[in-house]
Image 1 (cartoon, rainbow, N blue to C red):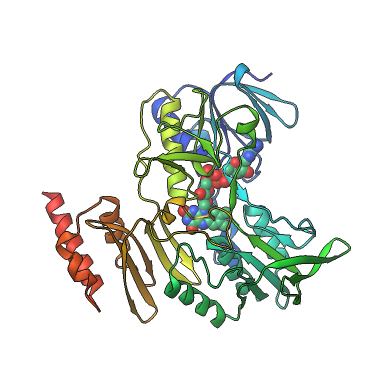
Image 2 (image 1 turned 60 degrees about the vertical axis):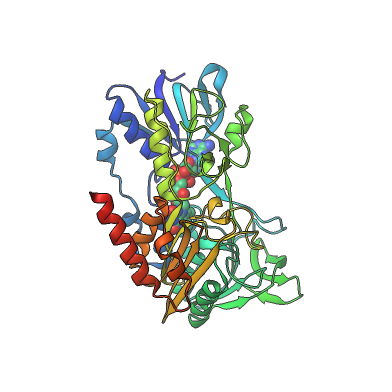
Length: 440
Ligand SMILES: Cc1cc2nc3c(=O)[nH]c(=O)nc-3n(C[C@H](O)[C@H](O)[C@H](O)COP(=O)(O)OP(=O)(O)OC[C@H]3O[C@@H](n4cnc5c(N)ncnc54)[C@H](O)[C@@H]3O)c2cc1C
Protein backbone atom coordinates (compact mmCIF):
# COMPACT_ATOMS: atom_id res chain seq x y z
CA UNK A 1 0.00 0.00 0.00
CA UNK A 2 1.16 3.54 -0.81
CA UNK A 3 2.11 5.76 2.18
CA UNK A 4 -0.68 7.72 3.87
CA UNK A 5 -1.59 10.89 2.05
CA UNK A 6 -3.23 13.74 3.91
CA UNK A 7 -5.53 14.92 1.16
CA UNK A 8 -6.78 12.72 -1.65
CA UNK A 9 -8.87 14.16 -4.45
CA UNK A 10 -10.72 12.08 -7.05
CA UNK A 11 -11.25 14.12 -10.21
CA UNK A 12 -9.04 16.78 -11.80
CA UNK A 13 -11.89 18.99 -13.00
CA UNK A 14 -12.33 22.55 -11.83
CA UNK A 15 -13.76 21.44 -8.44
CA UNK A 16 -10.75 19.22 -7.75
CA UNK A 17 -8.25 21.88 -8.81
CA UNK A 18 -9.95 24.59 -6.72
CA UNK A 19 -9.74 22.25 -3.73
CA UNK A 20 -5.97 21.81 -4.24
CA UNK A 21 -5.57 25.58 -4.34
CA UNK A 22 -7.67 26.04 -1.20
CA UNK A 23 -5.82 23.35 0.75
CA UNK A 24 -2.49 24.96 -0.13
CA UNK A 25 -3.80 28.35 0.99
CA UNK A 26 -4.17 26.79 4.48
CA UNK A 27 -1.54 24.09 4.63
CA UNK A 28 1.85 24.30 2.93
CA UNK A 29 3.29 21.01 4.12
CA UNK A 30 0.87 18.11 3.85
CA UNK A 31 0.77 15.68 0.96
CA UNK A 32 -1.88 16.12 -1.73
CA UNK A 33 -2.68 13.53 -4.40
CA UNK A 34 -5.02 14.31 -7.31
CA UNK A 35 -6.30 11.28 -9.20
CA UNK A 36 -7.91 11.42 -12.62
CA UNK A 37 -8.88 8.82 -15.17
CA UNK A 38 -8.41 11.45 -17.89
CA UNK A 39 -4.83 11.51 -19.12
CA UNK A 40 -5.18 15.20 -20.05
CA UNK A 41 -5.76 16.21 -16.41
CA UNK A 42 -7.28 19.66 -15.96
CA UNK A 43 -8.71 21.56 -18.92
CA UNK A 44 -11.62 23.89 -19.68
CA UNK A 45 -14.67 21.71 -20.19
CA UNK A 46 -16.92 24.59 -21.43
CA UNK A 47 -14.15 25.32 -23.95
CA UNK A 48 -14.79 21.94 -25.61
CA UNK A 49 -17.59 23.48 -27.69
CA UNK A 50 -15.13 25.96 -29.18
CA UNK A 51 -12.60 23.23 -29.86
CA UNK A 52 -15.35 21.36 -31.69
CA UNK A 53 -16.13 24.35 -33.92
CA UNK A 54 -12.41 24.88 -34.56
CA UNK A 55 -12.30 28.31 -32.86
CA UNK A 56 -9.87 26.95 -30.25
CA UNK A 57 -7.11 24.37 -30.49
CA UNK A 58 -6.52 21.77 -27.80
CA UNK A 59 -3.68 23.69 -26.20
CA UNK A 60 -6.03 26.64 -25.55
CA UNK A 61 -8.10 24.47 -23.19
CA UNK A 62 -5.27 23.83 -20.74
CA UNK A 63 -4.81 26.75 -18.36
CA UNK A 64 -2.65 24.82 -15.84
CA UNK A 65 0.89 23.78 -16.73
CA UNK A 66 2.87 21.05 -15.01
CA UNK A 67 4.93 23.81 -13.40
CA UNK A 68 1.85 25.11 -11.53
CA UNK A 69 1.12 21.64 -10.14
CA UNK A 70 4.77 21.40 -9.12
CA UNK A 71 4.53 24.74 -7.36
CA UNK A 72 1.39 23.55 -5.57
CA UNK A 73 3.30 20.37 -4.71
CA UNK A 74 0.38 18.31 -5.85
CA UNK A 75 1.09 14.82 -7.14
CA UNK A 76 -1.10 14.00 -10.16
CA UNK A 77 -1.89 10.32 -10.68
CA UNK A 78 -3.52 8.94 -13.81
CA UNK A 79 -5.76 6.08 -12.60
CA UNK A 80 -9.33 4.93 -12.23
CA UNK A 81 -10.65 4.79 -8.67
CA UNK A 82 -12.75 1.64 -8.32
CA UNK A 83 -13.84 1.80 -4.67
CA UNK A 84 -13.77 3.85 -1.49
CA UNK A 85 -13.42 2.06 1.84
CA UNK A 86 -14.38 4.64 4.49
CA UNK A 87 -13.86 2.24 7.42
CA UNK A 88 -10.17 1.96 6.46
CA UNK A 89 -9.91 5.50 5.06
CA UNK A 90 -8.56 4.11 1.83
CA UNK A 91 -9.35 4.04 -1.86
CA UNK A 92 -8.79 1.21 -4.30
CA UNK A 93 -7.59 1.69 -7.85
CA UNK A 94 -8.65 -0.38 -10.80
CA UNK A 95 -5.04 -1.52 -11.31
CA UNK A 96 -5.09 -3.04 -7.81
CA UNK A 97 -3.32 -0.19 -6.00
CA UNK A 98 -4.57 1.24 -2.73
CA UNK A 99 -4.08 4.72 -1.27
CA UNK A 100 -4.93 5.62 2.33
CA UNK A 101 -6.11 9.15 3.12
CA UNK A 102 -6.92 11.42 6.03
CA UNK A 103 -9.41 13.58 4.06
CA UNK A 104 -11.00 12.60 0.76
CA UNK A 105 -12.76 14.76 -1.85
CA UNK A 106 -15.04 13.19 -4.45
CA UNK A 107 -15.07 15.55 -7.44
CA UNK A 108 -15.97 13.05 -10.14
CA UNK A 109 -18.31 15.34 -12.10
CA UNK A 110 -21.17 14.11 -14.25
CA UNK A 111 -21.57 12.23 -17.49
CA UNK A 112 -24.03 12.28 -20.36
CA UNK A 113 -27.22 10.40 -19.55
CA UNK A 114 -27.54 7.43 -21.91
CA UNK A 115 -30.50 6.84 -24.17
CA UNK A 116 -32.27 3.56 -23.68
CA UNK A 117 -32.19 2.24 -27.24
CA UNK A 118 -30.48 -0.73 -28.93
CA UNK A 119 -27.50 0.18 -31.09
CA UNK A 120 -26.25 3.00 -28.86
CA UNK A 121 -22.78 1.42 -28.79
CA UNK A 122 -22.46 1.43 -32.60
CA UNK A 123 -19.51 3.30 -34.09
CA UNK A 124 -20.61 6.81 -34.98
CA UNK A 125 -22.84 7.30 -31.93
CA UNK A 126 -21.33 10.09 -29.86
CA UNK A 127 -21.87 12.32 -26.79
CA UNK A 128 -19.95 15.34 -25.51
CA UNK A 129 -18.40 14.91 -22.07
CA UNK A 130 -14.67 15.26 -22.54
CA UNK A 131 -11.73 15.97 -24.81
CA UNK A 132 -11.71 12.42 -26.19
CA UNK A 133 -15.32 12.90 -27.33
CA UNK A 134 -14.40 16.05 -29.24
CA UNK A 135 -11.47 14.31 -30.92
CA UNK A 136 -13.81 11.52 -32.00
CA UNK A 137 -16.54 13.87 -33.30
CA UNK A 138 -13.95 15.90 -35.21
CA UNK A 139 -12.61 12.72 -36.76
CA UNK A 140 -16.07 11.65 -37.89
CA UNK A 141 -17.35 15.08 -38.91
CA UNK A 142 -16.30 15.74 -42.50
CA UNK A 143 -17.84 17.88 -45.22
CA UNK A 144 -20.88 16.12 -46.68
CA UNK A 145 -21.29 13.62 -43.83
CA UNK A 146 -24.75 13.41 -42.30
CA UNK A 147 -25.65 13.64 -38.63
CA UNK A 148 -28.66 13.43 -36.37
CA UNK A 149 -28.54 15.25 -33.02
CA UNK A 150 -30.92 14.47 -30.17
CA UNK A 151 -31.49 16.39 -26.94
CA UNK A 152 -32.06 19.81 -25.44
CA UNK A 153 -30.14 22.44 -23.53
CA UNK A 154 -26.73 23.88 -24.26
CA UNK A 155 -24.78 20.72 -25.09
CA UNK A 156 -27.08 19.47 -27.85
CA UNK A 157 -26.96 22.90 -29.42
CA UNK A 158 -23.17 23.03 -29.10
CA UNK A 159 -22.90 19.73 -30.91
CA UNK A 160 -25.22 21.00 -33.67
CA UNK A 161 -23.09 24.14 -34.02
CA UNK A 162 -19.88 22.10 -34.03
CA UNK A 163 -21.16 19.83 -36.76
CA UNK A 164 -22.35 22.75 -38.86
CA UNK A 165 -18.93 24.38 -38.49
CA UNK A 166 -17.44 21.13 -39.81
CA UNK A 167 -19.81 21.26 -42.84
CA UNK A 168 -21.85 18.26 -41.73
CA UNK A 169 -25.47 18.02 -42.94
CA UNK A 170 -27.28 18.17 -39.63
CA UNK A 171 -30.75 17.04 -38.58
CA UNK A 172 -31.83 18.17 -35.13
CA UNK A 173 -34.63 16.18 -33.47
CA UNK A 174 -36.76 17.90 -30.81
CA UNK A 175 -39.38 15.84 -29.00
CA UNK A 176 -41.27 18.99 -28.08
CA UNK A 177 -42.59 21.90 -30.08
CA UNK A 178 -39.63 24.16 -29.40
CA UNK A 179 -36.03 24.32 -28.17
CA UNK A 180 -35.28 24.19 -24.39
CA UNK A 181 -38.85 24.92 -23.40
CA UNK A 182 -38.41 24.85 -19.62
CA UNK A 183 -35.75 27.58 -19.55
CA UNK A 184 -36.45 29.73 -22.63
CA UNK A 185 -39.77 31.32 -23.51
CA UNK A 186 -41.34 30.96 -26.95
CA UNK A 187 -39.64 34.07 -28.36
CA UNK A 188 -36.21 32.94 -27.18
CA UNK A 189 -36.67 29.41 -28.52
CA UNK A 190 -37.71 30.83 -31.88
CA UNK A 191 -34.68 33.15 -32.01
CA UNK A 192 -32.39 30.14 -31.55
CA UNK A 193 -34.30 27.94 -34.00
CA UNK A 194 -34.38 30.70 -36.61
CA UNK A 195 -30.60 31.10 -36.40
CA UNK A 196 -30.09 27.35 -36.72
CA UNK A 197 -32.32 27.20 -39.78
CA UNK A 198 -30.35 30.07 -41.33
CA UNK A 199 -27.23 27.93 -40.88
CA UNK A 200 -28.91 25.07 -42.74
CA UNK A 201 -29.86 22.87 -39.79
CA UNK A 202 -32.95 20.75 -40.44
CA UNK A 203 -35.06 20.91 -37.28
CA UNK A 204 -37.59 18.10 -36.81
CA UNK A 205 -40.16 19.09 -34.17
CA UNK A 206 -42.09 16.55 -32.10
CA UNK A 207 -39.77 13.87 -33.37
CA UNK A 208 -38.20 11.05 -31.41
CA UNK A 209 -36.02 8.13 -32.22
CA UNK A 210 -37.56 4.73 -32.87
CA UNK A 211 -34.46 2.74 -33.83
CA UNK A 212 -30.85 2.88 -34.92
CA UNK A 213 -29.76 1.13 -38.13
CA UNK A 214 -26.22 -0.20 -38.21
CA UNK A 215 -24.07 -2.24 -40.53
CA UNK A 216 -21.02 -4.14 -39.29
CA UNK A 217 -21.22 -2.23 -36.00
CA UNK A 218 -21.35 1.22 -37.63
CA UNK A 219 -24.43 3.46 -37.66
CA UNK A 220 -26.03 3.93 -41.08
CA UNK A 221 -29.26 5.69 -40.18
CA UNK A 222 -32.19 6.13 -37.82
CA UNK A 223 -35.95 5.70 -37.93
CA UNK A 224 -38.23 8.23 -36.23
CA UNK A 225 -41.34 7.21 -34.28
CA UNK A 226 -43.39 8.63 -37.15
CA UNK A 227 -41.72 6.05 -39.43
CA UNK A 228 -39.36 8.37 -41.33
CA UNK A 229 -35.93 6.89 -42.13
CA UNK A 230 -32.96 9.25 -42.20
CA UNK A 231 -29.52 8.10 -43.34
CA UNK A 232 -26.68 9.29 -41.14
CA UNK A 233 -23.01 8.63 -40.40
CA UNK A 234 -23.21 10.15 -36.94
CA UNK A 235 -25.77 10.22 -34.13
CA UNK A 236 -25.11 12.56 -31.20
CA UNK A 237 -27.14 12.61 -28.02
CA UNK A 238 -27.25 15.13 -25.16
CA UNK A 239 -30.41 14.40 -23.19
CA UNK A 240 -29.09 15.51 -19.78
CA UNK A 241 -26.42 14.57 -17.30
CA UNK A 242 -26.02 12.02 -14.52
CA UNK A 243 -23.71 12.85 -11.60
CA UNK A 244 -21.07 10.11 -11.19
CA UNK A 245 -22.29 8.85 -7.81
CA UNK A 246 -21.42 5.14 -8.10
CA UNK A 247 -18.36 5.25 -5.84
CA UNK A 248 -20.27 7.19 -3.18
CA UNK A 249 -23.35 4.98 -3.32
CA UNK A 250 -21.31 1.78 -3.16
CA UNK A 251 -19.55 2.88 0.03
CA UNK A 252 -22.74 3.90 1.77
CA UNK A 253 -22.69 7.70 1.52
CA UNK A 254 -26.05 9.49 1.37
CA UNK A 255 -26.92 9.88 -2.29
CA UNK A 256 -30.02 11.25 -3.97
CA UNK A 257 -29.62 12.52 -7.55
CA UNK A 258 -26.12 13.63 -6.52
CA UNK A 259 -24.03 13.14 -3.37
CA UNK A 260 -25.79 14.99 -0.55
CA UNK A 261 -23.45 17.47 1.14
CA UNK A 262 -23.91 19.94 3.97
CA UNK A 263 -22.92 23.59 3.68
CA UNK A 264 -19.30 22.62 4.37
CA UNK A 265 -19.39 20.29 1.33
CA UNK A 266 -19.14 17.39 3.75
CA UNK A 267 -20.89 14.11 2.91
CA UNK A 268 -22.63 11.84 5.41
CA UNK A 269 -19.07 10.60 6.31
CA UNK A 270 -17.29 13.55 8.00
CA UNK A 271 -13.86 12.72 6.49
CA UNK A 272 -15.26 12.61 2.94
CA UNK A 273 -16.25 15.73 1.02
CA UNK A 274 -17.87 16.18 -2.39
CA UNK A 275 -17.98 19.16 -4.77
CA UNK A 276 -18.89 20.18 -8.30
CA UNK A 277 -21.28 18.46 -10.70
CA UNK A 278 -21.40 15.32 -8.54
CA UNK A 279 -22.64 17.14 -5.43
CA UNK A 280 -26.21 17.98 -4.48
CA UNK A 281 -25.95 21.12 -2.38
CA UNK A 282 -28.23 22.92 0.04
CA UNK A 283 -30.03 25.92 -1.41
CA UNK A 284 -30.86 28.26 1.50
CA UNK A 285 -33.40 30.15 -0.66
CA UNK A 286 -35.68 27.14 -1.05
CA UNK A 287 -34.48 24.67 1.58
CA UNK A 288 -33.97 22.09 -1.19
CA UNK A 289 -30.86 20.17 -2.19
CA UNK A 290 -30.09 21.05 -5.80
CA UNK A 291 -27.75 20.11 -8.64
CA UNK A 292 -25.92 22.57 -10.83
CA UNK A 293 -23.70 21.91 -13.79
CA UNK A 294 -21.96 25.24 -13.81
CA UNK A 295 -18.22 25.82 -14.00
CA UNK A 296 -18.23 28.80 -11.58
CA UNK A 297 -20.26 27.02 -8.91
CA UNK A 298 -18.14 23.84 -9.22
CA UNK A 299 -15.04 25.98 -8.59
CA UNK A 300 -16.65 27.69 -5.57
CA UNK A 301 -17.71 24.37 -4.07
CA UNK A 302 -14.26 22.86 -4.64
CA UNK A 303 -12.67 25.86 -2.96
CA UNK A 304 -14.94 25.61 0.11
CA UNK A 305 -14.41 21.84 0.30
CA UNK A 306 -10.62 22.32 0.20
CA UNK A 307 -10.67 24.95 2.95
CA UNK A 308 -12.77 22.72 5.22
CA UNK A 309 -10.66 19.64 4.48
CA UNK A 310 -7.69 21.66 5.69
CA UNK A 311 -9.45 22.53 8.95
CA UNK A 312 -11.20 25.82 8.20
CA UNK A 313 -14.85 26.31 9.05
CA UNK A 314 -16.30 27.92 5.97
CA UNK A 315 -19.88 27.56 4.70
CA UNK A 316 -20.72 27.50 0.99
CA UNK A 317 -22.93 30.51 0.31
CA UNK A 318 -24.62 29.48 -2.88
CA UNK A 319 -24.82 32.45 -5.24
CA UNK A 320 -27.50 32.96 -7.89
CA UNK A 321 -26.82 30.44 -10.67
CA UNK A 322 -25.44 32.29 -13.64
CA UNK A 323 -24.14 31.42 -17.08
CA UNK A 324 -22.91 33.40 -20.04
CA UNK A 325 -22.97 31.10 -23.01
CA UNK A 326 -23.58 31.09 -26.74
CA UNK A 327 -26.86 29.88 -28.14
CA UNK A 328 -26.78 29.59 -31.92
CA UNK A 329 -24.05 32.23 -32.10
CA UNK A 330 -25.90 34.66 -29.84
CA UNK A 331 -24.17 35.46 -26.57
CA UNK A 332 -26.74 34.69 -23.89
CA UNK A 333 -26.77 35.35 -20.16
CA UNK A 334 -29.10 33.30 -17.98
CA UNK A 335 -29.38 34.31 -14.33
CA UNK A 336 -31.74 33.38 -11.49
CA UNK A 337 -35.11 31.69 -11.92
CA UNK A 338 -36.36 31.95 -15.47
CA UNK A 339 -38.41 28.89 -16.41
CA UNK A 340 -40.44 26.00 -15.08
CA UNK A 341 -41.74 22.53 -15.73
CA UNK A 342 -40.32 19.62 -17.65
CA UNK A 343 -38.61 19.63 -21.01
CA UNK A 344 -39.39 16.61 -23.18
CA UNK A 345 -35.83 16.70 -24.54
CA UNK A 346 -34.03 16.56 -21.21
CA UNK A 347 -33.80 14.16 -18.29
CA UNK A 348 -32.89 16.47 -15.40
CA UNK A 349 -30.47 19.22 -16.31
CA UNK A 350 -28.00 19.69 -19.14
CA UNK A 351 -24.40 20.94 -19.00
CA UNK A 352 -24.11 24.63 -18.16
CA UNK A 353 -27.54 24.44 -16.52
CA UNK A 354 -29.05 24.62 -13.02
CA UNK A 355 -32.08 23.04 -11.39
CA UNK A 356 -32.71 26.39 -9.75
CA UNK A 357 -33.47 28.03 -13.09
CA UNK A 358 -36.78 26.13 -13.12
CA UNK A 359 -38.01 27.10 -9.64
CA UNK A 360 -40.18 29.93 -10.87
CA UNK A 361 -42.73 31.10 -8.33
CA UNK A 362 -45.69 33.28 -9.35
CA UNK A 363 -44.05 36.18 -11.10
CA UNK A 364 -44.52 38.50 -14.03
CA UNK A 365 -42.28 38.48 -17.09
CA UNK A 366 -41.57 41.61 -19.12
CA UNK A 367 -39.54 41.64 -22.27
CA UNK A 368 -38.12 43.84 -24.92
CA UNK A 369 -36.84 43.03 -28.41
CA UNK A 370 -34.76 45.13 -30.73
CA UNK A 371 -33.24 43.67 -33.87
CA UNK A 372 -31.61 40.39 -32.82
CA UNK A 373 -31.32 41.42 -29.19
CA UNK A 374 -33.74 40.24 -26.57
CA UNK A 375 -34.18 40.80 -22.83
CA UNK A 376 -36.59 39.07 -20.49
CA UNK A 377 -36.96 40.05 -16.84
CA UNK A 378 -38.80 38.05 -14.21
CA UNK A 379 -40.27 40.40 -11.63
CA UNK A 380 -41.12 39.31 -8.09
CA UNK A 381 -43.13 41.57 -5.81
CA UNK A 382 -40.11 43.55 -4.66
CA UNK A 383 -37.07 42.21 -6.47
CA UNK A 384 -35.93 40.81 -9.79
CA UNK A 385 -35.95 37.00 -9.71
CA UNK A 386 -34.26 36.19 -12.97
CA UNK A 387 -33.36 37.31 -16.44
CA UNK A 388 -32.32 36.18 -19.89
CA UNK A 389 -30.28 38.51 -22.08
CA UNK A 390 -29.63 37.48 -25.68
CA UNK A 391 -27.37 39.41 -28.03
CA UNK A 392 -26.26 42.81 -26.68
CA UNK A 393 -24.82 42.14 -23.21
CA UNK A 394 -24.96 45.69 -21.80
CA UNK A 395 -27.39 44.53 -19.10
CA UNK A 396 -25.63 41.28 -18.22
CA UNK A 397 -23.54 42.51 -15.30
CA UNK A 398 -26.11 45.02 -13.91
CA UNK A 399 -28.86 42.40 -13.89
CA UNK A 400 -26.61 39.80 -12.34
CA UNK A 401 -25.76 42.19 -9.51
CA UNK A 402 -29.35 43.36 -8.98
CA UNK A 403 -30.60 39.75 -8.83
CA UNK A 404 -27.75 38.33 -6.77
CA UNK A 405 -28.07 41.09 -4.18
CA UNK A 406 -31.89 41.04 -4.01
CA UNK A 407 -31.91 44.79 -4.72
CA UNK A 408 -35.45 46.21 -4.24
CA UNK A 409 -37.04 47.37 -7.49
CA UNK A 410 -40.25 48.81 -6.05
CA UNK A 411 -39.39 52.31 -7.34
CA UNK A 412 -39.23 51.14 -10.98
CA UNK A 413 -41.56 48.13 -10.97
CA UNK A 414 -44.61 49.95 -12.37
CA UNK A 415 -42.50 51.57 -15.09
CA UNK A 416 -41.03 48.21 -16.08
CA UNK A 417 -44.54 46.87 -16.55
CA UNK A 418 -45.65 49.66 -18.91
CA UNK A 419 -46.01 48.70 -22.59
CA UNK A 420 -42.82 49.41 -24.57
CA UNK A 421 -40.98 50.33 -21.36
CA UNK A 422 -37.34 51.36 -21.99
CA UNK A 423 -36.01 48.38 -20.03
CA UNK A 424 -32.34 49.03 -20.69
CA UNK A 425 -32.47 52.65 -19.47
CA UNK A 426 -34.57 51.80 -16.43
CA UNK A 427 -32.25 48.97 -15.38
CA UNK A 428 -29.02 50.86 -16.00
CA UNK A 429 -30.28 53.91 -14.06
CA UNK A 430 -31.50 51.76 -11.19
CA UNK A 431 -28.25 49.78 -11.03
CA UNK A 432 -26.09 52.93 -11.24
CA UNK A 433 -28.10 54.49 -8.43
CA UNK A 434 -27.81 51.32 -6.31
CA UNK A 435 -24.06 51.10 -6.98
CA UNK A 436 -23.43 54.68 -5.92
CA UNK A 437 -25.56 54.42 -2.77
CA UNK A 438 -23.89 51.08 -2.04
CA UNK A 439 -20.42 52.61 -2.36
CA UNK A 440 -21.14 55.22 0.35
C1 LIG B 1 -19.51 20.53 -23.58
C2 LIG B 1 -19.69 21.21 -22.26
C3 LIG B 1 -20.13 22.51 -22.22
C4 LIG B 1 -20.32 23.15 -21.00
N1 LIG B 1 -20.72 24.45 -21.00
C5 LIG B 1 -20.79 25.13 -19.84
C6 LIG B 1 -21.11 26.52 -19.82
O1 LIG B 1 -21.40 27.11 -20.83
N2 LIG B 1 -21.10 27.15 -18.64
C7 LIG B 1 -20.86 26.51 -17.46
O2 LIG B 1 -20.88 27.15 -16.41
N3 LIG B 1 -20.58 25.19 -17.44
C8 LIG B 1 -20.53 24.49 -18.60
N4 LIG B 1 -20.24 23.15 -18.60
C9 LIG B 1 -20.22 22.44 -17.30
C10 LIG B 1 -18.90 22.56 -16.57
O3 LIG B 1 -17.87 22.20 -17.42
C11 LIG B 1 -18.98 21.67 -15.33
O4 LIG B 1 -19.93 22.22 -14.45
C12 LIG B 1 -17.65 21.54 -14.61
O5 LIG B 1 -16.65 21.10 -15.48
C13 LIG B 1 -17.78 20.57 -13.44
O6 LIG B 1 -16.53 20.38 -12.86
P1 LIG B 1 -16.22 19.15 -11.89
O7 LIG B 1 -14.86 19.39 -11.38
O8 LIG B 1 -17.33 18.98 -10.93
O9 LIG B 1 -16.29 17.86 -12.80
P2 LIG B 1 -15.55 17.47 -14.15
O10 LIG B 1 -15.01 18.66 -14.86
O11 LIG B 1 -16.51 16.60 -14.90
O12 LIG B 1 -14.30 16.58 -13.67
C14 LIG B 1 -14.46 15.31 -13.08
C15 LIG B 1 -13.26 14.48 -13.41
O13 LIG B 1 -13.25 13.29 -12.61
C16 LIG B 1 -12.88 12.20 -13.42
N5 LIG B 1 -13.37 10.95 -12.81
C17 LIG B 1 -14.65 10.54 -12.70
N6 LIG B 1 -14.71 9.35 -12.08
C18 LIG B 1 -13.45 8.98 -11.80
C19 LIG B 1 -12.86 7.83 -11.20
N7 LIG B 1 -13.60 6.81 -10.73
N8 LIG B 1 -11.50 7.79 -11.07
C20 LIG B 1 -10.74 8.80 -11.54
N9 LIG B 1 -11.24 9.91 -12.12
C21 LIG B 1 -12.58 10.01 -12.26
C22 LIG B 1 -13.57 12.53 -14.73
O14 LIG B 1 -13.10 11.77 -15.82
C23 LIG B 1 -13.23 14.00 -14.86
O15 LIG B 1 -11.98 14.20 -15.41
C24 LIG B 1 -20.05 22.48 -19.79
C25 LIG B 1 -19.59 21.15 -19.84
C26 LIG B 1 -19.41 20.52 -21.05
C27 LIG B 1 -18.91 19.10 -21.10
